[in-house]
Length: 108
Length: 192
View 1 (cartoon, chains in turn red, cyan):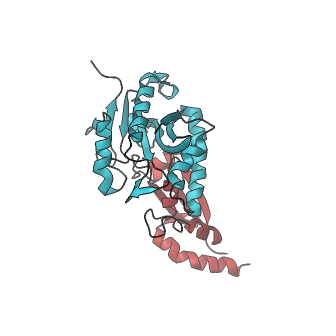
View 2 (cartoon, each protein chain N blue to C red):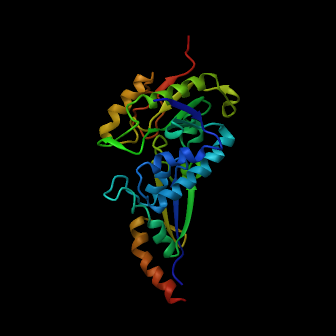
């Protein structure tokens, strides 16, 4: 069995774009929001646990884990990546994720 | 062109949610649609704890713009910086329309509808008693988004001009954890 993978997504509940950007969406890309921001589906397919946190409902968590959030910018968002409950960088997370998928599939 | 401004209520939540994501007339990414659902959930909750938190502009019964606002204590970090200040923070003002007239300009922009939304908010807050503020009135309205903290850089001067035209002034001492500055404010209760 591979490592347990989890992503925490912090978004402004008052702004659909904040949620979209949190999942990697691009605002004025060539496809104008048709295709961006769908890495949520990718995470789900890989069996990653996703925890979504509306930062308007969870001020304590935001202040603890995302104090750099710009409260005047409702487009703001934040992500935290975990493998086996250890927080790691996004880069490290995605570098290790394919192997965890293989491990998971191999265990079936 | 007759413009009607209505308060947000449980019946017109979808109008508000759809305005900012549906006007380009194309299908959006799945996550943007999900973001709209999250917004709807949040608005239902905000209506219960704060009351009307947006005003919607209608032309011929069609929703074409909105202004959205909340007590500043609803925002992380700011709740500590502003503590018991009775400030309403505008999170978004948008006027759209399906057709583009020039560049990014949409058909209902530049027709004074945004000003009508802001003036309606100012008029409302001068009299509205807010349970969130211990049933007292708001003292000030502030805005950071769309005039300094977010928005298209080339459009920021236009947005700032829009708020100045509606009575807002620079608030250099307004608490800002990002140190980015550029917050504008409108004093509702004038001090003698």
